[in-house]
Image 1 (spheres, chains in turn cyan, red):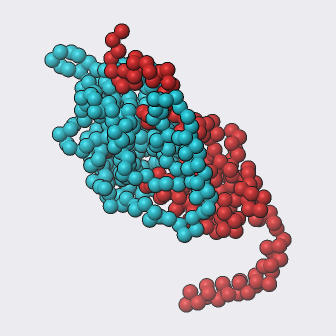
Image 2: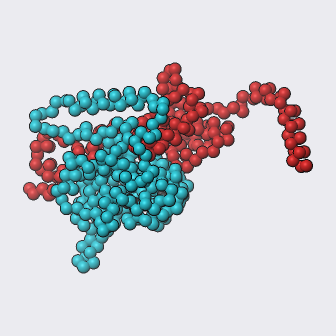
Image 3: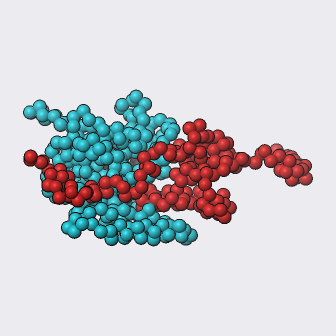
Length: 261
Length: 170
Ligand code: SF4
Ligand code: SF4
């Protein structure tokens, strides 16, 4: 745990926590066990039902969300992941590329010696030891128990220290008054923001928008999953293939790993 | 000296107004806020997610509490969620009132009570029903790489190799 502001599970429990939640939990528990008990042909194991977290449960450090990006499969000129992210979070530009919000961007790498070029998507690397959290004077930048790095915009003062500290230039500052934000992506002038690993989707057992778009287009360059679960597709691939962290020398233990760079 | 005079004036004014006050309050109901109806009721007996009296007084506590639980702990129960308040209390018509208008549920009262909040500088003040988030039930997606596979596919080497990210040699 790198962040002193992180709350203990249950620390926020309200005395009159409603029976609504406990009912819901019992109900969902019942559904999960029914599904798990359903017959499947012998020898066929469905790796599923696993991750669904009841809405009323707190996230824990048992999970660490991560991503593997295979740059060999990342097509030059394709920006489906970027478009999906913009759409998901309502990131609209003001025709000022220098300052417009950018949570994920395509970067082209060129080997000067050989002239070989490749492209890859760059986003917040969800560092285990995030410099953005270290420098934040208000405690607004924080790392969730499950490894997702976020900004609590309620207390962010917009000083932008974190933008300076991030080695990946992953953060943006909102310069303009905004309207029509997406319900699950509150954003506002004067605060800093970055990729949230689509935390609103992940909490609902869904995959980040960029990964979904990449997969839907059959590029399959991105895999999302739980690095702590040896059975997840992500862990299997990480174990099988060589992958790298960008700027591994900084020893931030990033949650996003790359193949083919 | 000046202060004493002002105080005196205030007293005179207040005394002069007092007898007329009840009449003033009764006289003009149009001064009270018109609060738009919610779209649903939790139950016939209890309209809102908590008894209405409690909601009037404490809704901000519930929302504040939920805010931290959601942000830091990923707790996404719907009962005290601001998104759900908006979904129920604001119409999803394209021309629905925005925060700031007396016809918007939240501002109808805040205006009357001279309360200034900044929730809606960042949060959506109208429901977005078309959002893909709401159209999919939890658990129907790819389960973070642990995709549910059909039996036929599972026994097919080609699929396994592809799913594992390997190159398939035909
Ligand atoms: S990539 Fe940058 S913004 Fe993301 S956790 Fe690391 S330092 Fe923070
Ligand atoms: S801009 Fe906000 S999140 Fe970043 S360091 Fe300053 S207060 Fe923290």
